[in-house]
Length: 475
Image 1 (tube, rainbow, N blue to C red):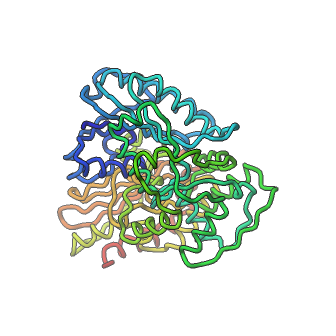
Image 2 (spheres, rainbow, N blue to C red; image 1 turned 90 degrees about the vertical axis):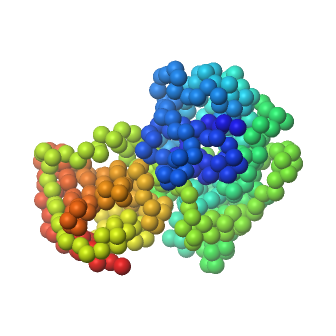
Image 3 (cartoon, one colour; image 1 turned 90 degrees about the horizontal axis):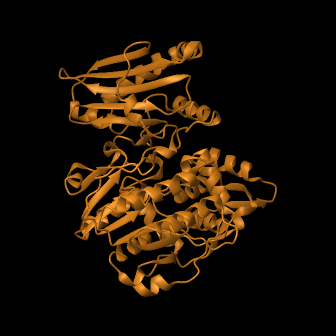
């Protein structure tokens, strides 16, 4: 079948794509920016890529007409704390319009469980999108999932950050709210098993794992699987705003996502019935099994996608292309050059920068800068990187965003997402004479920007000098 995959470069889309290809389907990836589709060239050769923004006005002829099945995996929860529900509704209406130009028979929508009379704004928005999609001229199948546990998922990474960093926790009372987590592997099984299944047309189904747990129990079970103990004390005085700040400073989540998560965590999210599991004969994994599978992927460096690479994890939501041309005028620059012997090894070192590898010199200074950025409302260093040695345009890399990663031209270009009185680029390039160029470019905003640059100039001398030397000699 020919399948339209919206949100193809999102966390779920990246997990679903290889499974659809393995099943022999033809896949059309719908993305806002083709350059941000983080898949290798071999996979790109197997799919059709279409650039379409469902938040913009409908344009005729963008999508192929011979679409059989479509996945609707578009969410905007983390892009705003105010109008994300309006954006989600607008996207759904535009999607319905695009579908009228195709021969699509079934649309599969991944939503959230909505079984509380007083829904959070997040879950209310998902229900509203569901209602809009039911008005489309196609058969709709809705999967309603609770917390999804998998390597790189926002829920898993938040639990991981909390447990690994805080052996003692004073937590708000919402940690006693019940939920029913489900493994990402099981979600993918359900999503693929629905293709063309007429018994599921125009139906909504809840899916979840076998365990109903409070958030406190999830934290405790995580610690048990990992082989340590944590102590959790619950207090009733933490307001939603304080809870959001708590998640923001302790974990790698953005503040906007933290606010929306806390709003949703006050509501119970439990499966009403298991009709779909019985219908499809799918046995779901326990919470402990889901954690174990996630760490096996992490240990094998097989994390396919991470929520941290989405644009919502940083400061810049779109139009990163306008930053790909590094300015030449009105800028301040620190440029280092070094003759290298082993081009292949140096290029490998460049592609490993950040995350667990660090920045090759003064990592403690980078950590301080990340902490200060977090205090100032920035992204800090906690996002790390998804792959230890692979980089794609659009990926997050600590508090940088990858603008260009081209191994053939031996060039890596990063753009700073930290809080700055200006705009900053960091570029690595190897020329034909085997000279490594490392260039930090800063475009200051007014006097404050220039004062900032000159105040840290002495640190640049040591940090950037040490960095290029260590990149050249590291094995």
